[in-house]
Image 1 (tube, rainbow, N blue to C red):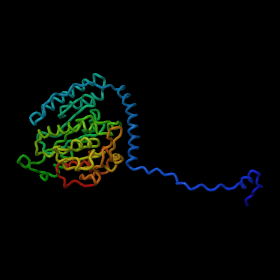
Image 2 (tube, rainbow, N blue to C red):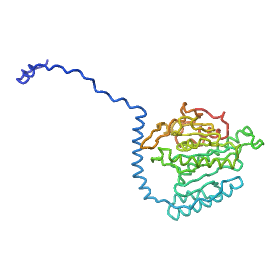
Image 3 (cartoon, rainbow, N blue to C red):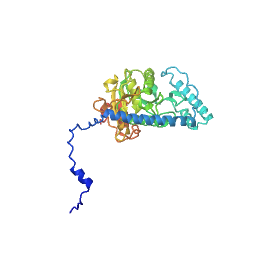
Image 4 (tube, rainbow, N blue to C red):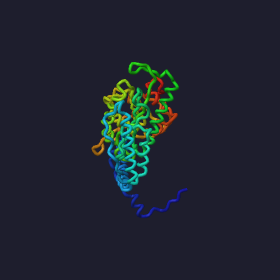
Length: 372
C-alpha cells in the first residue's frame, strides 16, 4: 500500500501548469562507425611504436653509458674465396678473432672477449669475421670445398657476436641431422654431380652478415636493416656459387626478421629453395611477388608468438611499418610444411618436426617433407 501526503502548494502549482507541447523528434546522435581491422592495427602499432621509442630513448642511452663500444681490429682483407683459398680464409679470420679477443679483454669486456676467443679455436671455419660493433660472422660447418648440398641460415633480431652461440647451435643441429639422414638412407640419397654418381656432401653456413635489429627497438618494425642487408646477402650467394659451382643445391633458411632480409634479396637470387620460418612477413603480398626463381617454403610452430603480429603494412610518420602478408596463409602461395608444437626459437631444435623437414629440403628430398 503506497502512502501519499497532501500535495504542497508548489507541487499543486506544478501539476496545474499546462503541459508544454512535445518537441519535434530529432535524429538520434550518429554512432561512430566501428573501427576497421586496419584502423585497429594502426592504433595498436602506434602504441607499440611509441613504447619502443620510449624504451629506445631510455634504455639505449643508459646501456651505451654503462657499456661503451669496444674497439676491434679491422677485418682481414681477403679476396672472394675459392676452393683453393678456403683454408687461407679460415686461418686469417681465426687470427683476426684472436686479436679481437685480446683487444676486448684489454678494454674490460669479458663477454665479448670470450665470444671472440671461442671463434679463434682451430676447429672453427669462418669465411668472414668482423669484431667491430655488434659483430659480423659467416661460419662454415662441414666440408664446403666438396659440398653439393649447402644450407645458408639467415638469423633474426638480437643476433650478435655475444649471442652467436645459440645461432650456431641451430646450424650444428641441422648439420647433424643432415648427416644422420644421409647415413640412414645409405645409397638412397645418391645423385649425379659433375658427371659422377656419389653420396651427397653437405655444408651448413651461418650468415650473420648484417647488423640485426634489437627485438625491443624501432628498427625491428621496419625494413631498413633488411634493405641494407639484402645486397650483402646477394653478394655472398654469388661468392658461394664461385666455391660450390652452379650444380650444387643451395637452400636459404631464413628465420624471423631474417625472412624480411631474404624477401628483399629474393629477386634473382641464385638459390634452389627458400624457407621462411617464424616470419612476421616478407614485405611481399605473395610468393610470386618475391620474384624468386627458388621454391618458396614457409612454416610456423604452434607455440610461436609471431602469430600475434598483424600481417599488414602501413605508412606511419613517413616510414613503412609492418611486413605484409602472412607467408603460411594459403593466399600467399608458399609450400607450407609442418613445424610441430615448437615456439619461436625451436625450429632447429634437435628431434623436432621442423628440423627434420628443413633437413629434407636441404637434401632435396621434397617428397619426404611433411606438409602442414
